[in-house]
View 1 (spheres, helix red, strand yellow):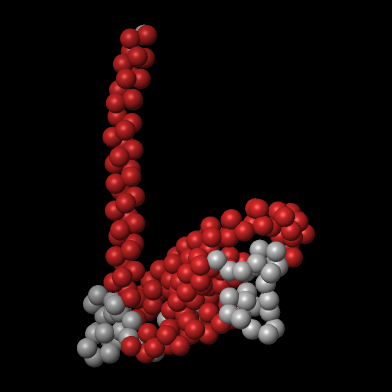
View 2: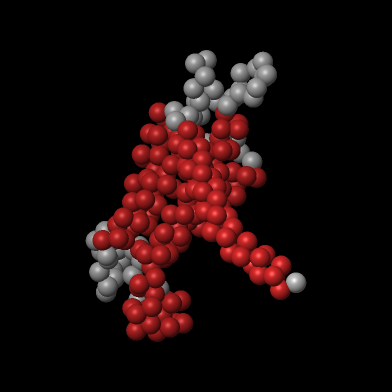
Amino acid sequence: MARRVRSVSLHTMTIDPLTAERTASRRGRARAGRLGEIVADLRLLGPRTWLRAALLAPVVALIIAVPADLIDNPVFGRPIPPKPIDYGILAVTAALIGLILAIRPEPSAATERQETRTLWGGAVSFLAVGCPVCNQAVVALVGTSGALSWWSPVQPIVGLVAVGLLVWTLSLRLRTYRLTACPLPGSSSEPVGVGRSGAADPD
């Protein structure tokens, strides 16, 4: 009985690294597949969608940057100067929000949820780039010194959370757009949003 237990344990120890490697490989392929799907869906977008995104992204950046005083203005101020990473987070999140809002699939409950997640992504982004001691909720919880020693170092991580949420929302938005804009196999009628050439029309 003891020999059998030892043999099972040895077998388990031998196979565990292989199982972990296979699991990691499958996860890596899944991530690469999702990234490839996003890139393929982005290619479906027409020039008007990209134009809308290019126009919306600066507006979103201003909505976040002015209250956070990333752009000097006479209305808002911050005693703690912004960090270089704040501008990077602002640029990425503004571009993602602009692109999500520029993509216009058929309205549905799914698109409403996506827009809600987009708003949450913008709010989290604002928390990530805002002045650490200007957040009254944080100051009330941990004080000014706690905001500087605890909240400020965490803000870049919060920014990555905002980027992750927006990338996930973008993938859902693109999938919704593809399902409503691309023809179904065997369909005889031309779907809404697809031109004669087969390219997806953004409107």
